[in-house]
Length: 260
Image (cartoon, rainbow, N blue to C red; front, top):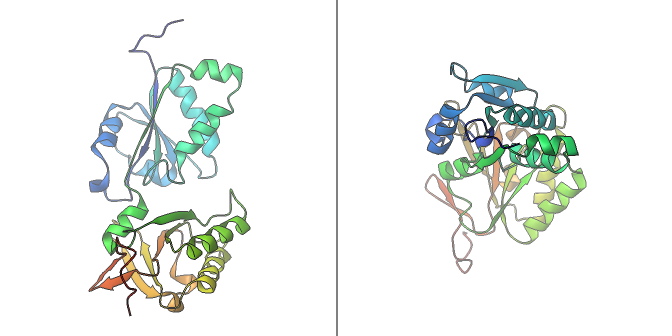
């Protein structure tokens, strides 16, 4: 059966940015204006409260796969659906969950979802917003590691931190700790202290772009686990990262001497 363009549903997987509406892309704004429905974790749905043209579908943060299935089902009925993430939907967020559901679809689901137009739209990540507020700590090669062990073993996280430190990458850490796993960031800090010099700069950026934003830059030797929570992005410099006034930057050239 052919489905007319007018009746064809869509699923736009979008990133709302790190918090400040000024950091939301125009592409995402246009998708919000054209949508009929939005799915997302409670805090992300709250950002769209008051938009009368949208039906909002909020759910818990541990219900990603069910959320993706429900959004695809609604889009298959011809609705124009949003899947919300903060930051960028492809960075530890809902884009992967949508494709995971599509890959595991039953034959009946494959048939039902075949006509849905799925598109991922980028957003400004908390990592990039934090780096910009700090200066340019990710100015050379860097990696990004999610410290949550909900979906991967803690041993894998520690190995990645140690190998990244040995390769002298700058690093950005998401989800450093939570009430249910307060020990995660303590383990990460210990791994860094084992592998890096005590003078290595480490930056704590909490609620970046929001009214209660805080930035804190210390040496690795002075860093403690309680400096980070789930609203904090942690950025660790490489061996050449240094401060210029209030800013932190990592040189583009690896031939520059380390700061003294």
